[in-house]
Amino acid sequence: MVAVITGRLTGPCMRKGIVILLVIATVVMTASWFRGEAQAIPAFARKYNMSCSNCHVSGFPKLNDFGNRFRDQGYQMNTDEDEPANTHFAYWPISLRTSIGYQYSSASRLAVGSPATDRAYATSGSFGFTGLDILSFGTITKNISYGVVYLPGLRSAGFNTGSTTSDSDLEYAFVRFNNIADSSLLNVRLGKHELDLPFSEKRSPTLNSLFAIYHYVPGSRFGGAISNPAGNPSYANANDLALGDNHLGVELMGWKETEATDGTFRYSVSVISNSSLNQTVSGGGRNVMVYGHATQSFSGYGFTEGHRVGVFGMYGQAPTVANAASASGSAISGAGQASKTFYRLGVDASTTALDGNLNLFGAYMFSEDSKDLFSTQGVVNAQAARWHGGFVEADYNITTPLVVYYRYDLIRNTRQGDSAFEKKFGDVDAHTLAFRHHFLVSKRMGAAFHAEYSYIRTAKTGAFNDDQIANVFFTGVDLAF
Image 1 (cartoon, rainbow, N blue to C red):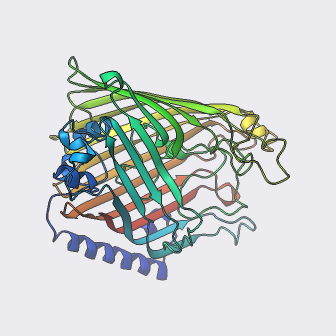
Image 2: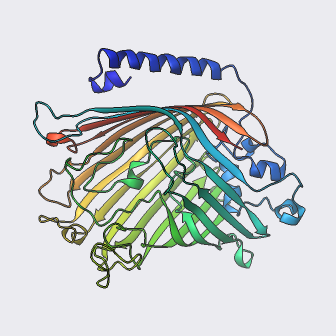
């Protein structure tokens, strides 16, 4: 597959590709021997004594309509079992998740120098695992819920990524007050949380391919498991916001069933800190940013029943310089200043077909980073950067345990932050194909065979102003228990 796309693999590399394809075929046939109903992260299944497929599409992690409503209600069923004191004795509100397997990656046009010799092409392959998530979600008492996700640093996770011992992180840490004044339209969440994006990256069935519009930064190459060397073309941008990351702040959200549409109206407004932006230069800022998302669904919630449309947007400021009191080369954390503006504005939609087995959804977003986000970082020919892009994904539930996914991501630049760069510098065309076979059923554990391939082309980001191609392939088992 890689050989066909890049046109670069011959001889021994081609033989390696054939071996990989044989391994895939063997694992696929092995996975097909198993049958059973899919299970999700099983903490709530243990608590309510029901199958995780009640809340998930075939299997974890994607939520179905019922699961989305359960989340919106603050992880409550509105029964006596919501109260921790009434919970079944076997329930323990902790879950673990990791993925174990083999990952192959490649990237082209990595070096600068002599055009005859230095158009470097690198490949990497290794067995390993994708880290470990330690999760706990639930209720403290009725209408007060919480969520905590801890990612411990690991000495060697494999995939040629090296040690992650310094990367431990409390990815989620929030408390949520539900049904304030007995209204589903008033719910408040405090702490570190995921923004209410058109489609949750944390709930995406794809394991190693990011949504481009959530992570694209003008001035640098997007995606790929192998990073560019310092010599490849790029320019500095003070705004390194990733919508897909979790953020510190407060969220006001609400929902209401609408009889006229037989669906649900939802809204979410988050006020979040910009202390995580531009930390390597300014140390992060002390300002706040605002993100909002509103949706209306018809004949269901819109992921396994009916349809949904929405609008979303963000207005923020990124710090451009360190506080004046900072010592040279040592920015005071959270004290960055001279913040400059940016915005994001988009629309999203979701529809279902084939009795809910097919879900087609996507989003499109327009963005601008102001001129000063580049000029303050040493860009001589600075101007406001503008780009637009989006994604469309189709998820097809072939049978109860087997689901196939395809996503196309697109970024198109209309003006660069550095006018010396071509308009199309950094444009993205990415394809992701994956399938999951949920072969293990247990209220204490779920397991799925997962195979995923992503192909990413970025315009003009390679050596000698060439387009770059990155490939990432993963095959293995996704475990939750």
